[in-house]
Length: 349
Ligand code: MRU
Image (tube, rainbow, N blue to C red; front, side):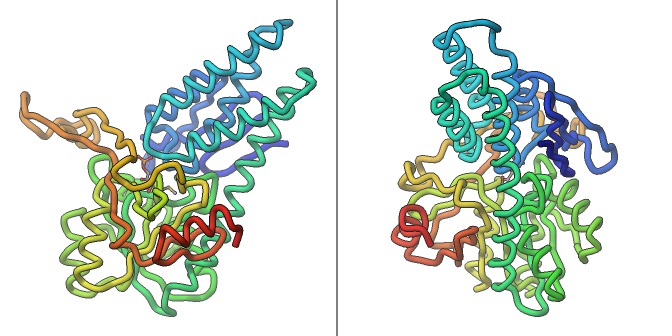
């Protein structure tokens, strides 16, 4: 079985990715034929967004299995696959979906008794992860759409769209679903400095869908919200702690504070795989710091003076008190988050 979406294509022996660093002006496909190349693509953000990097890593794991030393004994194959795991896991620290997908792949490997079936079995599991993600996003979309008014103006931050997932998106999935139900939805898109996922990717996706969208710089969000130009905020997540604290793209916290102050709902849309029950609160979530050049430069053009100090955290944490609801494929989670998240994770629906 194969897979082909806007974000990624599994050909059977390679993973093709649309190079998200170059969108929207250049549509270039990068073909990864080895797990090292997949790891590089995740680290360099050719592919990005929590569910997308999880699925990409799963296919990277399959490529790693294909690179196993031939005619080797089981223990050296296992040692090789541990290295594959470690390499892929070392790429980006914040989005838990990466580790969730790799753990699922590793578990599948440990359950294989006949090694001649290894590649096929792992490939099937990676495809399951990818296809499940699409269905999960559609379900999140349906739940989330029920929260939006018939006529609504929504602010979103970063890109939690088709490009950040295997397809359809989480936060943008909510918007897509509401629009497909006939609701009149307008979207304000934060540009999302420094990487500009909003200006480049979310704006592009919404334009392609014909959903009315207005781009603003991040520092305009407060004024937009204060003027009541939006009635809800919907964002994605990279990791959700057991108490409901949410790590998402840097700038999300500011938007949550603004939404709270102005009494509009702040929704987080994410699959259950983004919840990390091992992490009690947001303060334990590892926050990735990226290259200073992302801040000193805009689209490759240097804007800051040489020698200036830079801080570039890629994510921030929004405390659960600021979150109106977390929309998952198993339903909408509302406070008290600790209890309700535990029920969703351990107790089914
Ligand atoms: O650094 P990125 O672009 O990978 O960060 C992406 C985000 O923060 C998204 O909001 C999050 O991964 C959810 S994607 C459905």
